[in-house]
Amino acid sequence: MKEILQTRRLRLREMTKADFQNLCTILQDEKAMYAYEHAFSDEEVRDWLERQLERYRSDGFGLWAVERKDTGEFVGQAGLTWQETGRGQEIEIGYLFKRSAWHNGYATEAARGCKRYAFEQLGASRVVSIIRETNHASQQVARRLGMKPIGKMVKHYYHMDMPHLVFALEKEEADGVSEL
Image 1 (cartoon, rainbow, N blue to C red):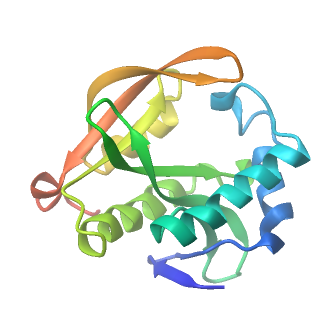
Image 2: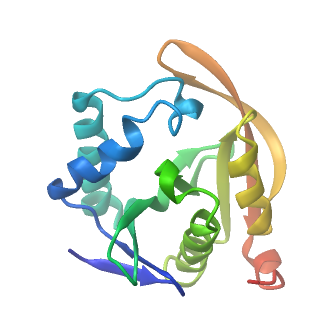
């Protein structure tokens, strides 16, 4: 398992096929998946995992497993993916955690590590997060990173049109954002 980065409490690493059950704890939990409007089937979880493995090969990054450093417990996934925002392909910071890990600051901590990785390792000039309009918790994470809403877009999931906000942060703005 290839480690990507560490934060104060977390380790982010590439997922492997062995992470299928870890992903099921998130992707098959209806409450954790409310932004997607449904819990995933086993086949959808396998497809999700395969998509990440392919992203590692093709892009050099994707969504990574997030583990607590003190226990090794899988708590979620966070990372970077290419997304279409209307300005072309941009690097998105994404995060999705199991419910038992919510309200511990893990999403913010992991997303900050991903932000640094995008700017310092990948040389990104801007990062975005595309967040469903009703997902206020994820919007708060984006704001803690220094991101601001810059527009709206509609994403099409499972035969539904879902309004999303696009949050963005330019590298030069990020340099002045406190990491506290």
